[in-house]
Length: 101
Image (cartoon, rainbow, N blue to C red; front, side, top):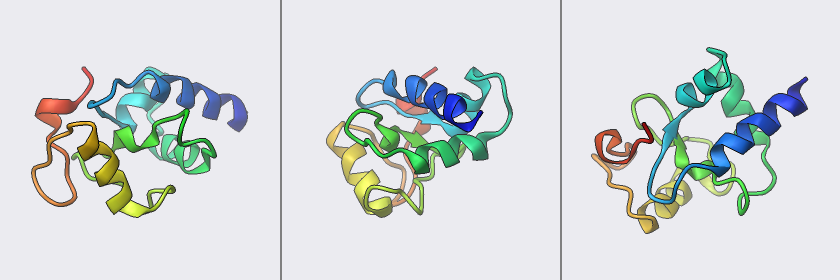
């Protein structure tokens, strides 16, 4: 069950365009659940950061993941900044300019 759910999460995350982000809640909603935490668990379990761009997923307020699996929040911020994502402060992206609708 988890494997199928995790794979479905990865399929959605793979489609997030460069320079854009989605929230855990948006992904959960797209999967027909309200369990955003489970989406986070799937992303934390991801072993292929080159194929599944987990760095493009933030919380509902635009906050970076404090436990970003591929090197912490600074690495997530660096990856997003390289893609042109704008930030409102050190730990939050500007959702008004970069969130997938």
